[in-house]
Length: 445
Image (tube, rainbow, N blue to C red):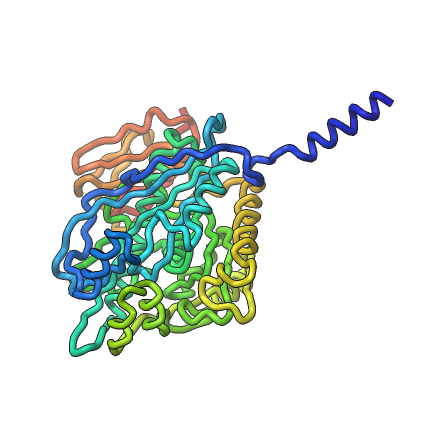
């Protein structure tokens, strides 16, 4: 009888035990304003409406909305993230989740509560993940003239591209500091809300310089995908939870098999579920973002020409056609960001938490490094493949990966410099140097 009672007690205790990555089990610490990229060029001169609203937001009256006059006046900014960690956690190879807020690329912050950015970071860190709320460059060129606000589709595309660059830099920063943060660089996941979801999906699917929207290459040229920040690390995450997101071209999805969760309201008119131009309801969006300027906004005419985006329905169709396993949660009749309707905030969060927990139960998938390719004229392997040298170029990022895609050595190299590879173990590797074709080599010592 005593033995039976003991077994029952043990079973009850086991059933009630918290499970890592599934249940809250840690207190959480936050390191705020961690710099992940410096000296990043950004727009400078706000238009008249935005200037008043930014100043108003500093006194707690409403949200700052960044609308700029032009792209010729530039400044340099520092990009930051807030990093949340489970306290007194002894694990060293934890998954990390980066959270990107929404705000129509003109508003929002890493301290956001309305879109649950802080909630996701805190809740996941309490479950054992390392998390980060990421700041990215905000602001659309929106000219006000003759009582009309005009946004050009090319300018909007450039705004999105700046955010894509920022998210890639944030991912590289996390991987560069993997040991310090106690994270597994092959388990980097993204949660994106609205604009943040667009950036997150573009992160895992845009992997070639040829896929950069042409608008990003007009003057002033916005530069390469990895133009700044840490170099020599993979820039793409290993999975994405996209809440009401889209991509600029479904062709970029190709055969990418990274896990994706797609959440979308079928009646979304801000980022359409199927195909269409985002922000067709721009007046309502701006009035929602800027309630203190509602009268001014209502008095304006709007000429907003955003580029066509392809929503979750299209992404789901491509992934299904390619036999890529993924999860969806599409809700009939619901609009954009339907957190506030019924109890969808709880339902959506559970979908996200379950998706991320499921990823922790599967083997990690290494990210691959993709660089622009050129004629292999400047790169030479040394004797017995124990070194390499470049004949031209300055401060070129390089990375050596094993056949599983894991980075074993990386850095930067300039013309005339030789990088020793003799410290590597026996095996087969791939060397990638920016501007050169990848070279596969082996060490047989």
